[in-house]
Length: 334
Image (tube, rainbow, N blue to C red):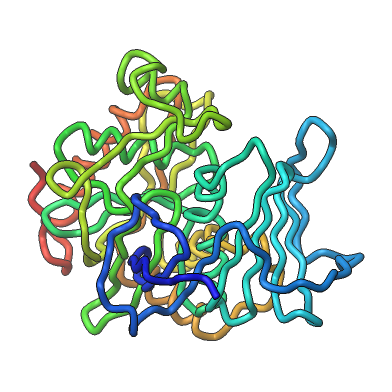
């Protein structure tokens, strides 16, 4: 039986792990663990037969023509099976109380963590009934401001641009949300932003300014800490901006989105909408309806070749204008 003495918290859930995970915030209450993670082992010894019709097959493929990600249900075993094209594999029980991760050499546990802390835990949150968006967030005067969009839309880059002004990041890639009596809360992730080399060069002047997330990945990472750059607890969510980059755009245009179209934007950017093509649970319908009616929602049209700073400045001005006349608690933009 694995040793689960390593206790952590991320995205609002308590985790116990068979291996130390230095990136995550430690906790000491082993009784409150909601999710156990085992590295380097399979959850069962018997062979399993993959389904002829996977739940999800990525359209993106590697150089050998293998889908980047395939997700299957294994009813005979009681697990979902996530297989990446580099032979990293995850098994999640149907209630998302266990995750088992394996990988092949030359990959390491650090490579497995790049998947675990993004898509895999995003999938687990969905199974546990927790709504999450594909997005990043920063905190301004105690309020979370989210940036949501497709892969490559500039979410992490924009968050890093805000961090450069002295604002702390709250989360990257997975924006886990919770309804509260006074609105909605956004949970903190882990203290790191992942950036593509061109974003690093744009922000810091040189790709070599930041290290790779692992030797096997080309992405870089910006380390954060509680003293400077990372917010260590959940925060009330006040605004979300959907990023819509285009090389044809000149300047930055922020379009405010009414409740009905905002609902569909939230639906499209639900973290696992792409993975599970199933009917939306009523709880998610109500959740997205509440988000659309409560938050300041903007759609940002911008040209990524012009860099993130003009977008950052335009969002700051937009927040300053709108929160002065909003029913939400005003924000002070520093």
